[in-house]
Length: 119
View (cartoon, rainbow, N blue to C red):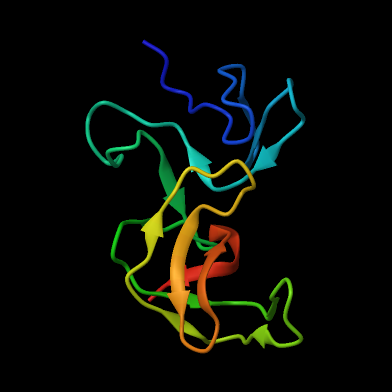
């Protein structure tokens, strides 16, 4: 039984853990937010676990805080440090944005879990 996650970029099963990073040798995608899923609980329905910048496990509906100013593509403004984001949804996206949410003043957008911390 394989316990390693699949690559969120190309869905390859050849992904391996190197220190704090998961690396896919097929597409060279690297991410730090995936951890091995286990059948003993702790993983969500999609079969992957998302961790914040501090290593805390995120779940659907959590509230997170942005830890870095984030430029918004297509806008001249940015999401500021300390912005609280409520009711997040976890997604397995190929572009690395594994949190889907709505931010007041910006609307719906995707965030990378490495730029948020659990509140």
